[in-house]
Structures are given as structure tokens and as C-alpha cells.
Length: 457
Image 1: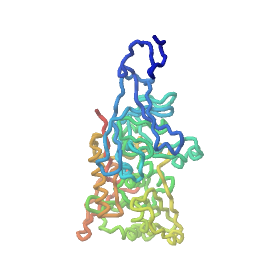
Image 2 (image 1 turned 45 degrees about the vertical axis):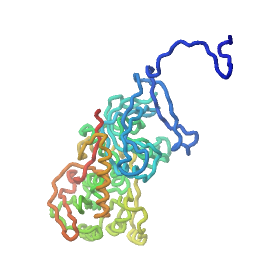
Image 3 (image 1 turned 180 degrees about the horizontal axis):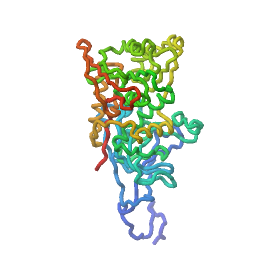
Image 4 (image 1 turned 90 degrees about the vertical axis):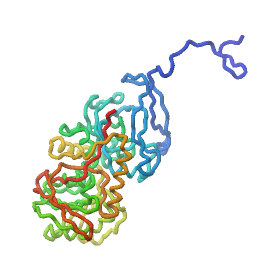
């Protein structure tokens, strides 16, 4: 006989071992994480890790739902997958999602603009409760209702230490650069969690983070809007546009807003006049702005449409006015019109997302009940394809009929009365006017609100 462990004919001979419990009876969990050897491999390299669950009891691997894309294309590529429950690392928290919102960015990523490593979980906005904290992490206790700041930052670079987190060298957006909120569970840095405003439901809390934080920075920090100033807001039917109307009206600014709905063009003003306006084309918008401002022009133009409205934005501004921009939906290379910019001494200000303090500031407005989002519908997670198709269909219709408007996200504020519409049969367009006092927060626009997801099993 050979001794145990001796190799004979390429076969290891080992003593008989006592029987062991089956694998499925062990408390194991499957986790998937990116561990790249070099930074350039992060988007390509994945490592499968099997480890024991620590901190929370579990007898099996628990699959959870996540809205993911495995390829780029139409709404049909958006799938509800079953994936292992994610686990927070040090400095992170696991949030059990109660609601998340559909944003324009979710549609762009599905279309590959920009393209992301697949599979990818969508969703930038969300609200839920803390389920667990990563090892050695201090933060909100499990069970705490939270809303998530979708802007992710390192917290240690020069910009972050100055409190300008949106200028962080490693700045990222939840759902664009990392897995997002359209899932039963989401892992986020603890510093991205904020107390959910008590007056808001989870669906309402999921409706405001991305667009309201962006609008706050554009208006308050970059454009330095003050009460009594005139502001022209493009695309008031979109998320960032309707948020701008809400915040500017709350501040006491005089708002001129343009938008479109269904087959037409609608416009409403947050001014003291209650006379419905006549229907106009986008190309004549600068003339109307001058009429409303006694020939002076707008103090601020809120731009996120891009090429289709750029020239009009320049003309609509007064001398020394400010143009603040955060998007270029219709194209990023409009005619520069440099001669008009330097002759009128205009300030052109870029803006992206918001700092942590700016996010806290806009959250306080909701906590104080000064503004409130309006949720159009709450859908189960399984209806994500239908919601994406509807959003894309509305946007295509707008591009065909009113190229200065587009709205994928349907968001915004508390409902108020609207005056009857006027219609131009030749142009096939209708306009809406809204009346309010300039200083009233109730002058916030009523637009298409958010579609939120529910996560009940």
C-alpha cells in the first residue's frame, strides 16, 4: 500500500475525510466587485468574490431586483434582472430603496450617450431607508429614512476641502458612472445620504435631488439671481427647467418661461399680470422678452437646450446680463456670436450638479414645506420599459414640433391655477399663461411631474 498523499499514476491518494455539510447549507454570499490592477482596467476588469456574510444573518444567497442594460438600444434593452444583494464597503451604506425617479440621463445612457460598461444599473435619484453600514463606518442608523445626493465626490481633493464638491477631480454621477438607484438595494457613500424631508413621501423625495440641486447652483451660486430680476427659463416642462421656475419664483424673481406640451408650444409667466399671452414662435422670443421688460432685456437666461436656442438667448439678455448653462440637448456647437457677447459684456457661466452645502440648502426648502414636488404616477419596477418608451416618445414629438423644447424627466412643483390657452391654428401651437405674485413661492410652475418607481414585493 502507498502512504496517504503519495502520487501514483498522476492521481493523489488521500485518506478518507469526514463528511461535510452541503454548500447550500452554509451562510455564504456572492458578491461582484471591480478590482482592477491598473486604473485603465477598471471599466473592463471584474472579479468574482465568495465570502461569508458579516454583521447580518443569512442562510442563503438572496437575489434582488435591478433595472439594468446589457446593450444599447431602445426601451426593450432595459431589463429587470435578479442580482446578488450588494454589500457596502467601509465608508458606504446599503440603502433599501423605496422610490427612485426616471431622468433624462437614464434615456441617454440607454442610447449609449455616453456609453458605459455593461451590464449597468440605471437611476440617479432615490429615497429609502438605511439597511446596513459598511465595516467600521459611522453614519445614519439602520432604519433611518434618507434621500440620496446623486453627485459623488472624493472628499479629500482641494475642491472638496473648499466645499466645492461639484468641482471634485473624481466627480461622478450616481447611475451614470456607478450603479444607480433603480434597484431594490443601492450602495452609496455615507456622505451622500441626507435626512428625507419629513413633509415628503418617499416618491416625492425621489423626485427632486438631481434637478433641484442643479437648478439651485445655477441660479443662486453661478448666476447670483436676486429678487426682482427678470429671468428667461428655456424648457420649463423639463426637470431642470421646471425646478428653475419653482426656485426663481420662490426667490421673488420675475420669470418668463417657455415650454411645449403634446402638439404645441406653451408658455407661462410668473408675473403680476394676469392677461393670457398671445401665441409666439421660439424665434420671436427675444422680442417678447424685451416687450415684457420695457425694452431692457432679461437679467439672466437659464439655458440647457443648446444650439437651437443659443442665438435667441444671447439676444434676449440685457447689457451686462448673465447666461448660465448646464446642458446642450440640441447640440453643443452653436454659432458663438462672440461679437454680441463682448459688445454686450455678457457673462457666460457653465454649471454642473451642486456642492454638498447647496444640496443641503435646497433640501431645507422641502423640509420647511416652502416647495413641494408633484408626482405624476408611481409605477412598479417591472414597468420600466413602458416608462422609458413613453419618455422617449414624448421627446421625439417635441423635437419634431418645437425644437427648442425637450423633456424626458417629468418633474416639479405644487399645482396652481392656469389661465385658458390661446391657440394659433396656422402654427398648430397653444400657449399657457400663469399668474402669480413675483414674490410668492406658489408661483412655481405646474409641469409634468416625476414618474417614480415603487419597490414593494
